[in-house]
Length: 82
Image 1: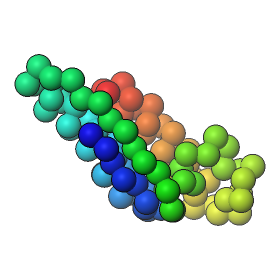
Image 2: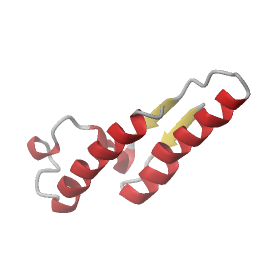
Image 3: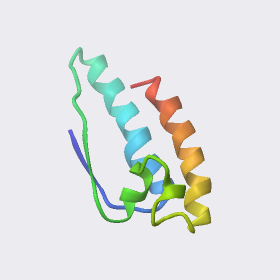
Image 4: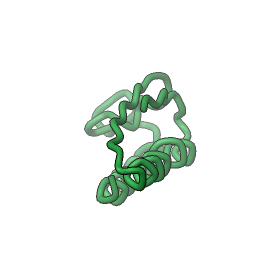
């Protein structure tokens, strides 16, 4: 499965990627099949994949810095299910 991610909206990211991957993985496991996932990032979504946004061009984006901390927690939580 390939996801094309361009959004900079954190809610869209969570819904379209994190929750969708968990749901699709559960579906394929119920069919005794494996699921390989690739996420292609570009556009506004790139900001969520920087190692430390406070040291990038996004360092003045206060919403991003708050979202990034929440996103990191969500990825860890969803990662347990993937």
